[in-house]
Length: 143
Image 1: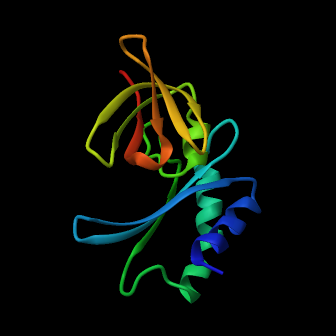
Image 2: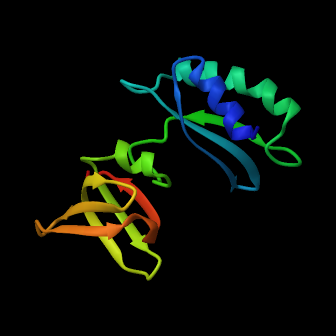
C-alpha cells in the first residue's frame, strides 16, 4: 500500500475525507501537507486529531528523507483541482484552468465528467473542455 492510501484510511476513521497530499518547500523547510474535508467543514480540533493519528505512521514511513513538518488542514476556499472528484465536488464554484495547449478558461463550473468539464463564462456562454486536456486548475473566490 502507498503512504497516501494509509493516510486516507486514518483520516476516514475519524469521519474526514482525504482531499490531497503534497510535499512542499517553503522558507527552506520541507512540509508534508495533508488536506482533509468533511461535510460542514473542518474544525481545528479535527485537524489536530488527524495530525496525532498520522504522525506515528510518518515516523515509520516518512514521506521524504530528512527533516519535514506535518501540516494537516482544510484545502481552503481557493484550492487546486487535480482529480475528477475534485472537479465534481466543486460544481457551482468559480474555477480557472489552463489546458495542455495553453488555452485559459475562467468561469463557474457547471458539470464534470470523465469526458469533459463544462463552465459558464463571465459572458454567459458555456464552454466544454475535454477533461484530459486540463493541465492546471483551481477554484477561486471573488472578494
